[in-house]
Length: 622
Image (cartoon, rainbow, N blue to C red):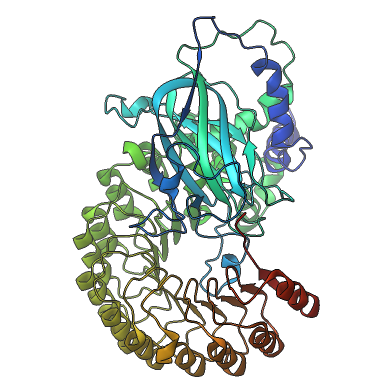
């Protein structure tokens, strides 16, 4: 037989894998509509009454606008009955995530995106909610009170958060509903009621994932309602109208994209076809095949490796795993997955394990084994919300990753304070994110002393730090290359700390001093910042009521590169000073004047008319 025929088989397989997603015309929403054929025909016994319950507890989340020691704008407001709904507007009793829109992606502190992120994974934040009773869910309702439309995925977990009896091997997450981000052209309250699919296990643990990139302002959630049956509903026989595209596209993709361990098993046990040759693939340069495969997602790479020995060799080449983003597969990633990937990741430089390993999916020993083999070339390590981490893990990172420049431990709030001492050994760090961690002052001072190459530092909501003035003094003395600094909700920094920062870190382009109550404009601290930091592109002075016209005029005269300014809540700024700022700062694109008592809606409309390229935000409470 001619060698052309096996070659055509491989080419057909390859072409199918590469282009199948791009050829789709049906959206995820259309697929879910087709599932209604099944769902609308489910029936229950008359004795199997529906249970309706609000969330009992918020068990985990990735970020929130509020503080760690209050209830205003925190995720904890999602527990219990509604506080605000059906009212609309900006209320402190709701749950609010830290960011919205694309503004944070446009800042100097923004990180570059990972390659090979599957297009169907667009989640930016999440919150997990525990309910009193386990039920087979029939509906999940989300009460949104301001700028709705952020929720893009709802999942259910088989594990009971109030019971330790669920074996790790049977714990799993199932997607109830999923949709791409869509723009909702209204800021009013709504009860979001997506059509969810049926699952074959009871649950009392629900996860909402959100994407706020299309929102005009912060989304606010008030409560989540879980409807379900105590006993498993019996599916009606009227289920013949099933679209075959459902099975071929998204259902298949969900199972495989989240089930990396199942792919691993198939890949490792696959019997690859022995052929006389590989047709025209033998004539292609090795580098060209590598370049082609670089466009595949990780699951597709694993599938392609099962086609023939030549492509298996290419798919297992460590050069394909220089950038490895495992966050999209958080729901199924486990020790087995890491062990399987280990041999291929000896050259990995960027590794994203954010959101992974929780509830026993990844062990300390499994993570440590992986890094001991794959950590030597690591430059960037993302571990946001990775709650399996402990002191041993940070010690292994400090020992096995000598080239590490970028470390994200955001919302790793279960790490013990003393564990952060190991971070000081990473002397090449240029970016360090410690948002919502329990890092203590002694460990942080050690980090700042030894990591003098830092360019980006996030210390937002670090509640264990006793004296931020001492920290600011050390930053000013040691971190001369610092470009961005996040001090969101630091509780006790004063004008003395600001003076040390301004004199020592004159390369600063981004500074977040939002919700820092001890800073007072009367001390001249904000005017000093404006005069000594001419490169500022982003400045957040959120909820500082003392910001005044003098501060705005200093910014207008000295910080002409300013692009984003948040002065929410000040009583002392007039429309006239804002006009001077907008005339001087030609690059200004975001200006938040919400709850500024002198800036009414009429003033905002006038400024918008004069400066149409600037997004001027003015929140409201009904």
